[in-house]
Length: 218
Ligand code: B12
Image (cartoon, rainbow, N blue to C red; front, top):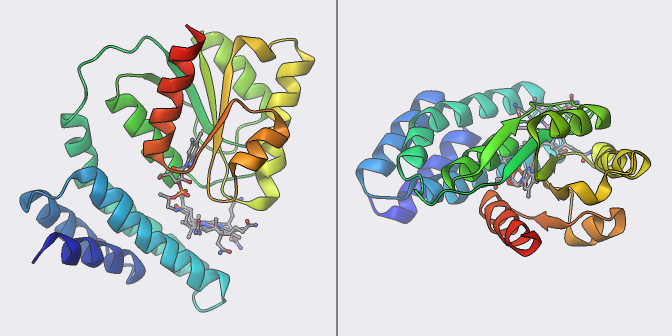
């Protein structure tokens, strides 16, 4: 099976909500020399996008979404150690406090961002999901963070990203941190609108963005 077929099989395992197939195909990908990053971005995430579209059109329902998320996590158990094994040895000094914003329970994309930032040498404090604006600000202070990274997967929770920036401004802390946003409904336009320092479309973008902003601020 060539690389493209393996990536398609990974995506299909997510659409078919099949954890065994997802795990086995992830192993097959590694054994065949497919990069773990490509397996995540071009395989698993594509499948997740497809099931999300089917859900959006009312063709599948919440239980299927949950099962797809489960299959995704199964495959990640194989791929995460492979990503970590490729960890870059260049020591980064920056600390990133990352979480999904208030009202939003989606964690898969955030977890990938956390893994890639870590494997690129950043110190990551993962706050989990559904965290209030004040939580972000307080935890950033405790961690002596350089960057606050906000994940959001629903149009309805986008205002929670803005709320973090508003709280930072109110507390006169806005200049202390770089704030980056991401998640499917967000965009560069949105980042500009709420006064964030940057937007990343994918976990790979998130790493490039944080590197660029941190180096610029030094
Ligand atoms: C999986 C999923 C779930 C799972 C989540 C499991 C989990 N542990 O995360 C479950 C089943 C729990 C779920 C629940 C719900 N969901 Co849901 N879900 C999805 C789905 C299908 C995929 C999301 C995902 O994991 N994608 C894969 C990852 C890898 O991609 P990603 O998250 O976009 O992350 C990448 C980038 O965005 C970026 N990124 C992410 N974060 C950040 C942060 C920064 C700083 C940067 C730079 C980059 C970055 O990097 C990541 C990797 O490349 C989406 C559809 C979609 N197309 O997004 C719907 C979707 C987000 N859900 C939706 C809905 C409606 C819900 C529910 C309300 C359903 C319900 N009726 O209960 C609940 C909400 C619960 C809540 N309060 O949050 C809607 C949202 C609609 C809207 N208003 O915008 C969507 C779009 C589906 C749809 N088409 O209608 N969901």
